[in-house]
Image (cartoon, rainbow, N blue to C red; front, side, top):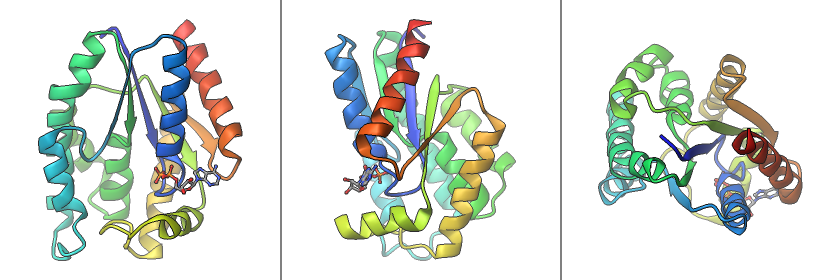
Length: 207
Ligand code: ADP
């Protein structure tokens, strides 16, 4: 792989898509070819799977079904979009990746980190981000931002306890993978967070 694979993760409403847009602009201004994508989704098939996962009517969905659907969307995403872009030397900015499955399904749904890693070993074929930004925010603050912005989806409508566990899952991941996962604080200003992110990306790309 010759490109750069950068993922943005953290609670809903932490500012992932805001920061991805700013990072895209900054990198394009420096001459990089940048692809912006998201999970679940990123491909036509992945977006169809996304609508099943996030549909508020799918209340009976089992946690394992959810985990496998995320992995199925990810398999398509990696094969159809991410790996080809990286082979062409592009920068791929992805809103959520495997860490989200570990935090949401592995920890918050209680399926276990090993189970989620196992399923996803097939989906990713071992592909890992070069850098992951964990936007650290109190999950209640993030959810309130989402509520102000749009209708909540099936996962966003989960209980406060669920969102707290997701948050704890992210903290555990950050502690486990300190060289890949960079933590930034989501309650700082949009500009401050962006400056921190671009500095880390530039250091990594230039070395
Ligand atoms: P996510 O993609 O993580 O769900 P968004 O980027 O869509 O989050 O941001 C959710 C909302 O919070 C948007 O209305 C956005 O403008 C706002 N927002 C994003 N970052 C910040 C920030 N650092 N401070 C205050 N509000 C923010």
